[in-house]
Length: 384
Image 1 (cartoon, rainbow, N blue to C red):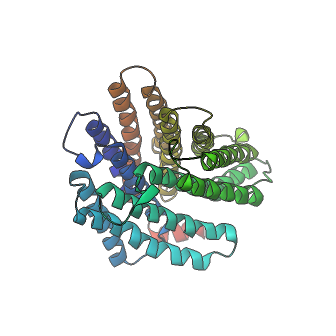
Image 2 (cartoon, rainbow, N blue to C red; image 1 turned 120 degrees about the vertical axis):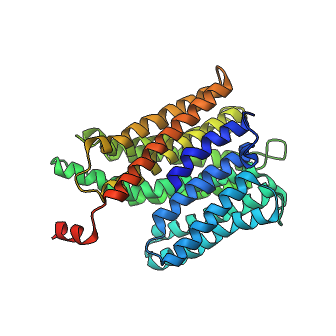
Image 3 (cartoon, helix red, strand yellow; image 1 turned 90 degrees about the horizontal axis):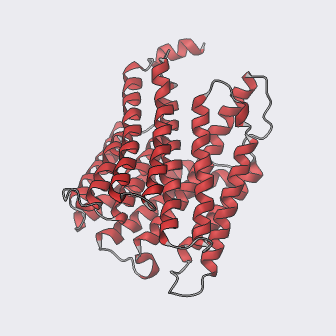
């Protein structure tokens, strides 16, 4: 569902924002566009990745709330019913995620995960009240763009955390099969520093004033923390020795997502600290993180999970995530160019179509994997 929604919502949003159609009022503003990419698409991916085993009733309720919220937001963004639908999904999701993960986590670094997820769901609730124009949100948090920047930072922290849990052991296993040792796997000190830096940056982003509202030391602190986190993420990526991999383009695709994230954090930090001026640079950095990293990593993790359930997947099927990764890289390049040169509408549409094509390919892969998945007893036999 997340892959299918990603494939249709971004082109619809670009069409609405550029005046090509008036059919999707909820997607016609930058805040609405960001809302659906983060809390429509990305939060659905989080749910699928982190919920674990749930009863059919719980899944049906969550799916129904998510679908109602998407339809209500896209077609009728204003009103109390839409607000209620938009708030209900993240609240119920947080209620299922946080207690289970907090109960199973022993180390403080692992306990950061449920805190991140709860904060992401909380930011979804706050943005819902702001965007719909109802509720108790006042003061600096009444600016949806501020809360959306905080949400992007939280998603970036989640990507950094999950990257250490997914990419590192997978790369280490492949290098071991090639006869190469990789001593730096999880890198707990680096991971702890990344969590601390990103939490500090998130708090500073939430508290920093706009340029006309007061001193900028909080913005400078947020920028410094983001730059340091991006540089440290690049160091961690380099220590995984990805250049030694042979015959694993899927792992190179994961590395591309991590590289986009490191670059995006540095660019966002520079914009936040005023090292580069203008809202255009902030927008560019946010799209490097969201299109480049969030898009690439979610696509490839979802594809790897699906392919692991398919017996004897064809070479063509395994190439789909690679093609999707290249399409997302093209989408990033086109979106960055749209802010600087050429016909804005044409470049935005081209970027949206590249994104849509990537997730349409992912949807085809997921559907094929679902139809071809090995039954449980067959997997048990193979394991034995």
